[in-house]
Length: 468
Ligand code: MN
Ligand code: MN
Image 1 (cartoon, rainbow, N blue to C red):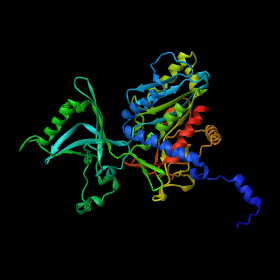
Image 2: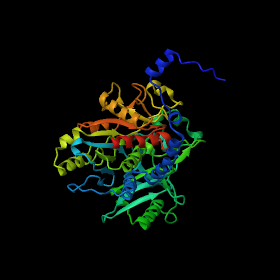
Image 3: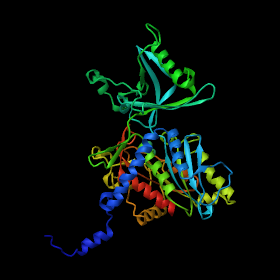
């Protein structure tokens, strides 16, 4: 039997003064954990339906339209409580609900990204060599190239044909589809390869996708290539020159699955950053009659620097705020100055297999809830937004009041490497912004892992933010 002693003064002081790390499984009710598992089912469907940014935009618009959101065009009349979305060239998306308060009080928005590391086809991809058909590629974003060999790949994208018609392509997702493949060297003959630094094990120009081997007819020069082109012509009406005006990506053909005996984790391609994009939509849709105008921004091109007119550095996303300000006859400068943003992106979860790259006291852990990252960047805090103590304080109070389990983190040990998010591109517009997202294991790998309770906490965090 336990001997109930009164807590010592020192013990009580410790409880009062020390920071205590929280774990979702210790803190959440059984109902909340059940809700997290249920929430994960919708998230997995979203993952499987949207492996590239174009598909994310389409899938997200379907979700939004089902909730009564309508397309927005610059200059259109909007009303309080009105729900709108703005499609940025099919590759980026802003969805928003007009608040009951004046827009002068600012827009509260969550910014995530919907592009993920992958392998894109080059403009002249198709060739035949030694009896095999291949597609040349150019990798997109930060990948470990060796991870993309010897796994089943699917092709996703759009082709704009010579006559201007657009064909969307998805091959390799249905169980009856063929898949694609980047071959690697057998260990028996890999003595030289295995002695190379990992970054050189597979060169960028070796990421060639095996795409066929059967010639159009016997003893024919480039017969395999011709046969592949004939198949593409019959199915999509495309000729070789149509690759010039196409965006086709090879992504892992794996489906999102539960991981572990207890199904507490989710494995998938592209958690970074659908794991924040999806909660930003569900949170936006969950909030009724918000005080502030609230918005979810799903940007493209984060993995390559947020450039281009669909990346977060594009005026396209901020022009909406300017346009809404004009519509209501207020200053867009004032609206931006009062706006708040959660830059919703992932962070590197502490990995017990690689403890040496993290500083444990300042790392995020799987199952410890949403991770607030005050600054990202590299070296001596270079190239980062670095949220103010004031805004960090506002957000921690908001999360505590809403019962959201949260933690803070840096991205790895000092001088170990580094990384960035869209936060600094938003801060440029005189908007308070801080990073908030999910700890991920094996970030940027073809199959990444997150925790179900952490994902659900992002939904709850963004919901609380939109309700503020
Ligand atoms: Mn990201
Ligand atoms: Mn990333």
